[in-house]
Image (cartoon, rainbow, N blue to C red; front, top):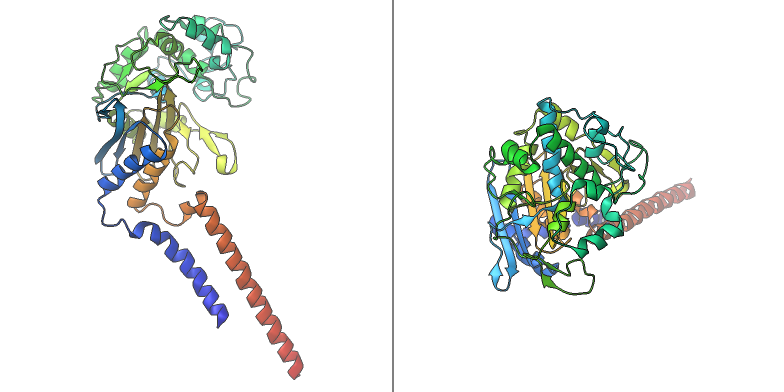
Length: 420
């Protein structure tokens, strides 16, 4: 009898506990649940402001904002954020588009397009630049480039100048994986040579105009409108200061980052881009297949991947579901662009705090997936401490049940032997 009770408790634990987490909010409209994530997130994670957008499988768009830009000015949906390395997704897609048009090949060596540079193997292919398997040194890892950036923040650096700061490669081409912004600087140089145009002109002609993405701008080559979410920090002085950096000179940083960062846009427009790209409206299927060939990175809970300008996210980021896209950060901003191919969902989050977009993105994703009925009990085991606690308790109960069963069987055998 006691064994039956223990089994019943164990089953109730597995069935009831997950349902308790969502039983209290069934009457709350989806829009309000998503807004609550933003409102609670900026407080919990000490974020100034956030702008987010979600595109659902039926094409329905939700946008939300919370917090402040500066002073008493709240974040508005039409405010632009610097999306940092998400720019790489635009550059990679443009490269694939040019390959479709026959203007270049992903297997072209650098020697076909660029002169020789110290510490750059001319046999490296465009594909290896795209997926970070080139081994080329990351220029930001050289402290001297930061020191020289600070000396003159108005200087517009040429790509050739930036390349003088790279050191010996990390490995031979194709022998490993290492994230390096230098790869995308070289890609931008190749694109401008192949098209005889500027990077911003090609992005606008190929993508932004056809998709009616009106907010996007590429810094240095285009003027960034004033309706930006304000950003704050020490301006790389490392002195503990906290200044409004929005309109301070940043030409040096932006020109050094050419190709690897530099795009400013709204959350809504980035969600439109994300959904259009991964739902097959921009590139041919063959190009998409090549883009989504991922190099494996890490293992276990840290396992992720990188394709041609696209990240395959950890399951902890995507609540256990397969998701890809890109993350990014720039001066005082952080951003995520996430797409769920199986469920035809796109999620974008932008914050005006450097490097603080991850937690609120994960929460928003979890809320969307739960509301869509995509996730149930399994994702709970990806989260700490709740998931870990469930595993521990379930294991203890299972051990107790097995011990009870074993003891009961032994008791019966003993009784049977005594009666014989």
